[in-house]
Amino acid sequence: MIRSLRIYFLGLALREKLLVVAILAIGVMIWASNFSDRTGRFWRAQRTTTAALKEQDVYLNNQAKIEAGAKTAAARLVPSETLNATRLFTTIQQIANECGLNSNLREEQPTQVMSNGQLTVNAMRFTISNADWPALEKFYLALNQRSPYIALKSAQLVPNRANPAQQLTFIATVSAVEILP
Amino acid sequence: MCASPLSFLRSGPPPPKIVLLPDGLFFTRVVVISAGATAADAAAQIELALEAASPFPLSQLYHGWFWTPGAEQAVVFAAYRRRFTSEQMAAWADAELVMPACAALFGATVEPATTIVLAAADGLTAVHWETPGVPSRVVFKPLDPEATDDDRARVREELLRAMGGSKVVLDLPAPPAADPAQSDREVVFRSGDFVSRLPAPVASALDVRDKADLAALRAARHRDVVLWRVALGCAAALLLLGLAEIGVIAGGSWQNTRIAVQKARAPLVEKIKASQSLANLIDDLVNKRLLPLEMVTTLVGLDNKWKPDDITITRVDTSPNTDEIYTLLLEVQTANGSLINVYESQIRKLPECEDVKVTAKPSPGNRLTFSVVVTFKPGAIKAATHV
Image 1 (cartoon, rainbow over the protein chains, first blue to last red):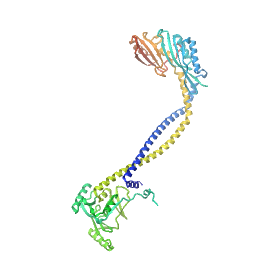
Image 2 (image 1 turned 135 degrees about the vertical axis):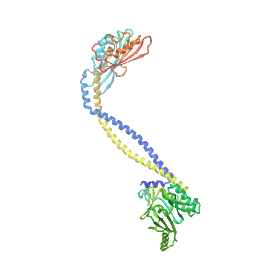
Image 3 (image 1 turned 60 degrees about the vertical axis):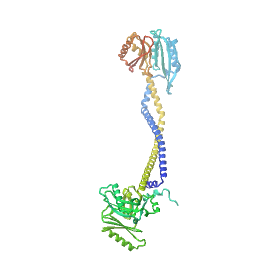
Image 4 (image 1 turned 60 degrees about the horizontal axis):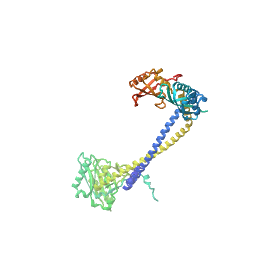
């Protein structure tokens, strides 16, 4: 058949041969360009899916282990002891009050950091200005006793320029976790 | 009723278009070729011999020859150009070969001392081989169109006698016809059991047309073959693209199945991820505590045991790097720059410390400011009940 086609093609006029070659070449170029785009997209999509499926496999293969770990971890917290945003705000206020630092305390409103339906994490920034060292130490230890329900996320200590040995300003961010019922 | 436009595909390739001219129009000679001659040498020797033998200059002749590489003789045939009418020559334009009818026999595989007698309307041609290869004699005897069978038999006998002893005599009532073109490498003529195979380079020398015209025709043919190969390459590419499209369609279906699996698994996987993040968070809350005052106490020592008195801490920051709970930044000032080196080496000696980086900072006045970034070993600092 190829031989017959060849003889037929060679028997065409030159302009007809050129036209046939041009049509075929343009067809190849258009199709190849389009095909290359689609193949590229397909290749990227299948790689993404492969990666996602592998990640899912890892989670599914470790499902029992992860859920057992989560149960063990959750058992370490008493849900009634966990704090929502309001309780975090008032607890810090209460500790400062107990340490005689109520007048030095300035709190910002707590903000929700994350929530996944099982738990919510709230964070709050506060400043205790010009506090005496013993009172601040007492506040810090009291705050530590509320761990892990209240966790210190960042802290800055700046000595008072006028009385660096005795007075400090304490700027901190704390977070509290609330286990939802 | 019209035949299908693609009927030529079913019928197979047609025979090449070959114009066989009457032998009577040509005079034929056998020319000696020097041993070891190349095709170009042979062509030069043949044309020289033809010029010597012909009463006309070469430019007024249509000529061709039969010579195979290594042969020490060639058969040359030529005709005066004016013996052909313009109508006859018009048919040559799209022919692949134009040659005398007897030239179609030259490619036969024969025994030594073989003579083939080719009958035509205008006469008989005898081609004789003393040895296989190139014929040793080609003789044409004209016949009257109204000649009887007896006349033909007589002329045949005369021809055979002229050839000398022939062990094998083969009579062909008509010139052999070209076989359908199966390849470009040879031209095959067949008449019953008789077969003559002419390799393409040998066959091209048989063509009697004007050599300049032939060169132009061959250049055009070469160009057309290149165009054919380009067209064939494009067609092959289209075929491959078609196959690849089938592959992509199959791949797309496979990919859709995988996406469906991924979507079906997603809720369960999200639940597992949530369980893991819960476990990690609680673990961090319980085990990874930021202990800034304990870290400061470690760095200055009980009752400022490690810290030189002349160094004043102006700021403590736990977050020089985000989320890093084992790093503490001390900003210190001193009037005596050498003390910072003493303090740095003192900190390095602490078993809780992993790394210390001291950087000088610009500061107003005569006191020098340094930032001391200390990285503690994980778990080395314990929560204190009293700082």
